[in-house]
Length: 450
Image 1 (tube, rainbow, N blue to C red):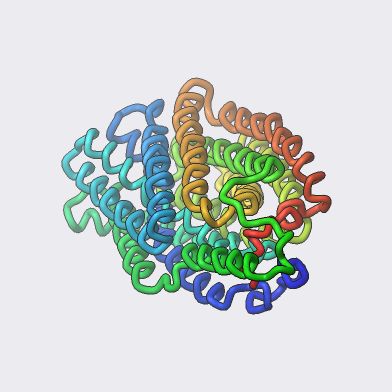
Image 2: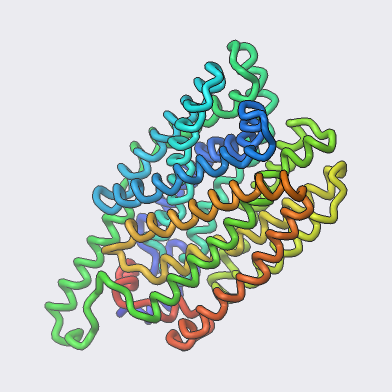
């Protein structure tokens, strides 16, 4: 065990951080900036595109459901590719799929083909899954005490693209017009460029591969343990997890899934709600841009809270903020851009706290040997949650309006989120500290700090 050194860990270049960690985070930050605009395209335009092509508001949640279903497939496929070959090839393949899917959506709008649109959105979802899986890559070589902050740095980098993307709706729409394409296909042209650039950058610069390095370090540490009689009593690294770690894993997944369902449900219908109250597509895009900015710009705050105060506290705080966001969204006048902006900013802030703390909990519980594949499986749950939120949002909106949708989401997060806290109690007792995940860190996760 390397606990004497891992108790420090306040500087990225300190003794508990691998020498390659700073470079890896730099590469990931740039790739997230490049790909962020690709994530924004489906969020901002998907519902409006479906309403136009399907001719029904009740079906406007279908794009969200489709690309999140694609994200579920992508999470498994990219996660297993990373498990087998490493993060660099796995992430590159995912970004390439996002490029192909984006171009498929553009072609579908040009041909007015609903079938091609559905296929394009499914494949596009693989790219969005890849963007979110990158956060785990930032944590591969991070010390336990800085793991949430490493995740938050990667998410923070998405802010540039996700804020710029929705605000470029008008510009990309003009470009599509100039090329003789439907105006709503413009953001997906930007998405194709964004995903393609990220694929090329990761393939060239993500060296050394952080997952492969973490495995090599684990193997090296095990060899040292076997060769040193003084460490004969130190438990060997395991490919399975203990019951305490399993509770931590379940807690992290629960927090992320609930946050994802509520955030997706409210966000997906906001552009249509604003359009019904006379706002332009560009105005709705600005509000969504502010929401996405709150999601990612607040990530460093979420990371600091999760590392220093605790994952459970950060998750609980995020729950209360999301509930407040739902109330504001339900009570805000639809014609007020300011009120809608406040609601969506709060929604993004609460999601950030739940997502960062949940991601840290998941990574805390997993050994390097099985980490990538399990993380991909976890993100399948997130994609299913997002698909559920997207589909339900259209039906609830069509049947009861935006107010009912917002209130339903608020009470869902308020009623179900305490389940995560209950799951955390035994995990916290097992760790014997307020920061349960860091204290409960087994020997195999201490390896990177050697």
